[in-house]
Length: 161
Image (tube, rainbow, N blue to C red; front, side, top):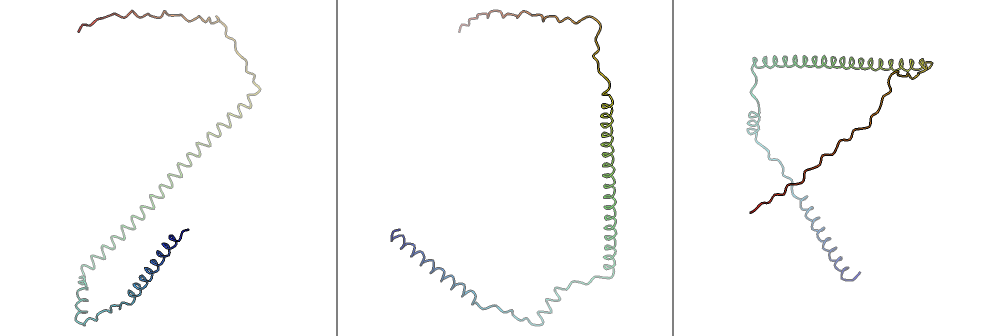
């Protein structure tokens, strides 16, 4: 490497170190800033805030209505839960019924195949003979050739412009 490239790298390194030092100093100054302490409020201001935050108390009738609404909500939730359980049970029963029907169909097919195989094994003793047909023998005639139609010669037409 040439000396000029080394010198350039050294200069860049010095610049980076200088920047790092500046960043550290800035970080130190940020940490040294005093923390803001909360301002103490007077008793009057605290009372005013509390009264502003307080909600109006409900009347007895409102409380009764709220209880009724809660009871109705709980009843509906219970009904929905029961209906959901019933639907799930019905769905399970339907699925079991379909599975059983499918299994029965498959078992019947298996039994039919087994019976067919047993019948074939029992039929091995029977000899299959070819039956001769009595009657006239079939005569195969050669295909008839049809003449190919010829095109008429094109008509010459002249156009005068």
